[in-house]
Length: 255
Length: 305
Image 1 (spheres, each protein chain N blue to C red):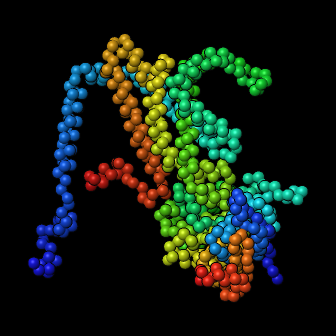
Image 2 (cartoon, helix red, strand yellow; image 1 turned 90 degrees about the vertical axis):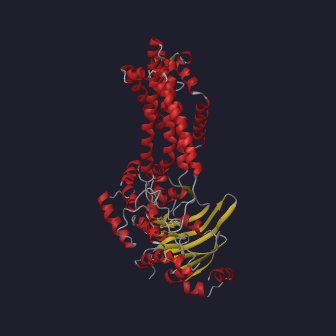
């Protein structure tokens, strides 16, 4: 029995000006699955992720989350961009974690986590605080609610960023190189939180350079190069016995 | 010389900051400080003993009712100009940052014109608006008017002053606010968008509070500039602080002491504003620095302890 498809990307094209970044990407992510996207820098990994919650406008193709077209509606065979309010509603159920954390520095840890639940989901402050504290504890930072982000280490900040995204109770989590800005000794604590989420059944797309993590946690690894999916498959296959020369070349450089 | 004896510090060296470290002596500092202090003392002495300053007269008029009323008007004008100017300036900044080329152009044009025309010239224009537009009407553009009034009746000296100061301030405020907004990292907006927040909420809750850190010093500067800039309204016979003392010295010819009265008030208000700015800046520094710097009051207490 196969689980429902959460993300369906078909023939996605995206260019910045005259520079093509994605040239026809197809991707499917099923409920509860962890998909790791790997590839050389400039291959379009981050752009692909940013198309999933419409932080980037697309040029052609389709991105669907939970069967709903993201950022556009189809009318007479053409895609029309949605109004801000509709896009905002779609984004609210898709969590995103950034390479540079992007915590709000003027808000405390707790305020960072409860800002959107109150302002977007319409939770009462009391309910949001309960939820916020619970999530902060879940990422192992109970007691740091009143700290400001700059008073935390990079790894702690990224864990709070994950808690902030979870507070929206998303049906999908996107991770854009979540450990690339961290000191090597802090990478483990963040990956552990992500692995816990995977364990709990969260559907996730993770752009990463951590091959060991991909091997351990991913259900599917996707190798992206020059804006195309070169190959994808279970980590044991793709990472140990890649079929394509380009994948082999890339793995030889990073492993 | 044996090494072993060097390793044992003599008992008297205990109190020295670090054993065997002698900081560089700087006799030049002492001499220059002394020279400046002597010069300063001479200057203070001349100010205090020079009869022409007429400190008695200064004291007499310092809290005169006319002066206080003038001060009140100056403060009121300053606050009004600041609030209206920054409200309009924020709108202009938002227009300037919007994607709409017409709105961007209009906001740019506004800032260009109102920064280019000297404040005094602008005030005179508004004061003489009746010559340009004898009547002002409220109605549909290119269509019928509903209400129509004579502009000389509507725009007296005080209204001319408020309009002129506000429009002038707004042009500067727009640039200050825009500078603050673009100083906030794009990642902040993206993170907020990814959480499903709307544009208005992002501006209010995420961008502006962070922009405040660079807006406040510039706005403080602008506020102090406006406070002193209001003295220009005396040319339209609006009875601010400066015009009030002018009224008095035109009667009794005690020009210097009365100018001193105005000067001391301007300095006093500016000092209060500078202190307030320090605390506002400190408030918006929350989270931007790991530990807030102590307030001057905390620092003083720390020294005395």
